[in-house]
Image (cartoon, rainbow, N blue to C red; front, side, top):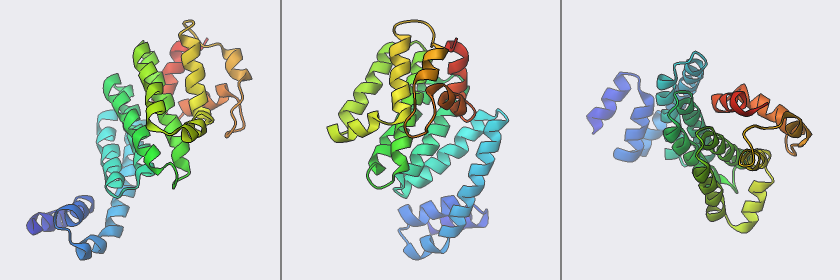
Length: 227
């Protein structure tokens, strides 16, 4: 496998070389020798992936975001890995692959709660994962699947932690949107404007509109349901 490591180095694939050194060769010296190179490569992948997504090349963006997610998951940096799985899910959503989008969002949630106590942004990421999961299921008219997502939050966190999640703005929006749509076919613009976000210091409508600039899932959802 040392030959495979050398080949990865020769073609400039420091992410793969780092993976081989850490998980296959278990060679700490080689791993640390190329760690900075691997991080630089990840930074380049992020910039390329964001650019590809902005240009509508979602299939290629998925590959790069997934590679970033797997790198940080391998480093047990679950909070950061979760954010990349969210990006993967959003790209799948843009290609109308709702099943893989949902799987990616749920994976993002599962990883975020692993860093719940040590990485403060993980709370926001976890609640965002839930919101995007709910939007995907409601967009596809999968009401029963939406119920399962809320069940997941009850089974995956202790009561004290569940309360913290429920106080998060994105989770509150997810619950509001779900309750609204099971009663009707649209979201009421005025009601969203009245609902106040706590962490972001704004209203639900503005928060959703801001999210729609970054996430295609939110943009399409609002186009369909906001009246």
